[in-house]
Length: 278
Image (cartoon, rainbow, N blue to C red; front, side, top):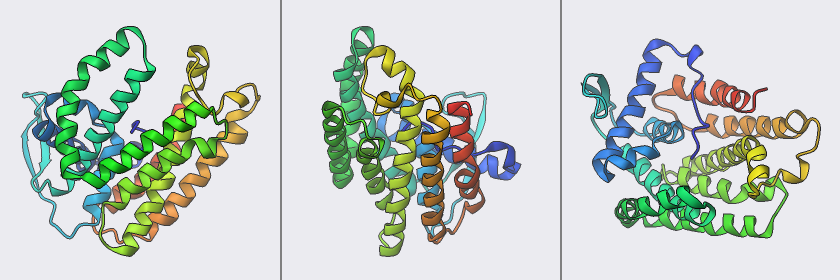
C-alpha cells in the first residue's frame, strides 16, 4: 500500500484524531512485536484504515492504555489492549512487503537493487511467519503479483485493465475481515474500488518519473494530453470514491464511524488533490 488512504485532519475533533493516532501507533507496535523492528517500515495510513475497518466490525471492546512510544522512549502513546484485529493487518503488511521487495529486486538497478537484496532475508523470515498463518491471503497476494507482472510485460495502456490486479488483490484483503456473507460482499466491493483508487493515483503521480526512467505506466500513451488529470484522471477517481461510499454505507459499523466517515467522504478527495496538485 502507498499511504493514499488518509484522514482529513482539519475536520477531525481532537478525540477522533487521538483515536486515529492510537490505531496507527498500535499497528506500529504490533508489527515490531510480531515481525521485528524493520517490519515497522511497512506502516502506512492505508493499513491503519484496514485496521479501523476491521475493528469497526468487531463486537469486541476496544480499550487503550498509555505507554512509552516504542520508537521514542521520551514520548507517550495510547495503545490498543486487544490486538486481535491488528494481527491480520500486520500479516497483510508483511506479505505485501515481501512480494514488493521481490518485485523491486527485478525492477531496480544499482544501489537500490543492492539494498533490496540485503533486506530480502530479513523480510523473508517475517513473510514465512505471516504466510504460514494466513495461507489464503498469501495466495491472493502471490496471484496479484503474477497478474501485475503479466500486465506490465504486455505493456497494457488501458488504465482499467492495468488497475485490475491491484483492485482484485485489495478486494480479497478486505473480504477476509469478516465471516458474515453480506459484510464480506460489501468489503470485497469496497476493497476492489480502493485498489483501483490507489493504483490510479499512484500511476498519475509517477507518470513523469516513469517516462524519464523508462518504466511501465499505463498512462504513458496519454501523457501529452493537455488536460489529462482534469478530464481523465479526476472523473475516474471521483467515481471510485462514490462507489466506495455506497459499499461502506452497507456495512454494520459498530465503532470509529466518525473517523471512517472522515476518511471516505473527505480524506480520499483531499489526498488525491494534494498528491496530484489540483
